[in-house]
Amino acid sequence: MSEKEKSLQAVLDKIIDGKKVFGASFAVKKDNFTWSGSSGNLPEDRPYFIASTTKLFTTTLILHLRAENKLTLEDRISKYLKKPILTGLHVYKGEDCSEDLTIRHLLSHTSGIPDYFQGKGANGKSLEDEIKSGTDLHWTFEQAIERTKTMKSLFIPGAKDKAHYSDANFQLLGNIIETITNRPYSQNCNDLIIRPLGLSSTYLYQDATDKIPQTLYYKAGELNIPKAMASFGPDGGMVSTSADMLFFMEAFITGKMFPLEYVKELQQWNKIFPPMRSGIGIHLFKLPVIFDPTGAIPYFIGHSGLSGALAYHSPEENIYVAGTVNQVAHPDISFKTMIKLTRVAMK
Image (cartoon, rainbow, N blue to C red; front, side, top):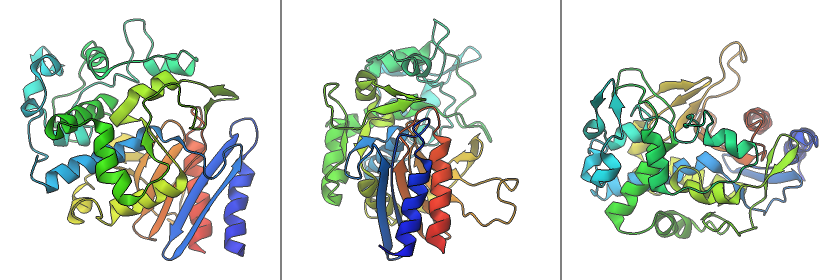
């Protein structure tokens, strides 16, 4: 084991404290150097829930369909969605704006559609709140959209400098993918991404009795929510390993699954939640000057999830990082870990 590999492993070993982080798995690639490792109770080859990092798969499928001239980003979603889904989907100040929504609005979170997962329902609680309390719930695509319709839309579609993160956007994109291809979302992932790239440990979690993925943690306890994880689908339902996600991320950035010029087009940033910005199907992570006064840490593009999973690329340093700390209460630890691993990889 080289000194660099020892230093990378030491980063993972150090974050396992048995209080916040019980297991971690990461993979790093810098130019021709590739490393993967794990620590704690998460073996390197054990698949884990990647949560919203799944949105990169959905983005990939949309871009693939675009390359095949099956859709454009400016297409109105009314072209693909059934009337009962579309009606009342986006009502802002008494006006139904549902017919104005485009695929670009959904991908970039500029639709103004509320978030069925983090938005509060009639009982004053969000699905996120209920799940974190240990209540395992199942929902269908139709139920997610009906829940969305009970919440207030935030702004008109495409309002200048406005973005609001909403899982409903990607539920809708998943439905559009299925409508265009006449195949389930999972089959699209298998046929267009997983099999061509040889991602042997990656799949859409659909069976709540499936015990293969590592159980999530919330604070000091296990968070066993298989029904919920089987409900997310195109907005957060994939299971993978760090090695698979590293390979997928490189394929995404280097144009293996859609034209390379699309990657630049995705990088139109809106503020979403600091220090994150939302692009078109991807996020930008850049530390503010107060935390990085010398500008030594590069910016990253990719995506992350509430489970503590992430997959990012640094264009400046040509570094890829994928992994998880498998902790719903502290996903920020994943970003701190990514920064530490990046520092080692840059040496």
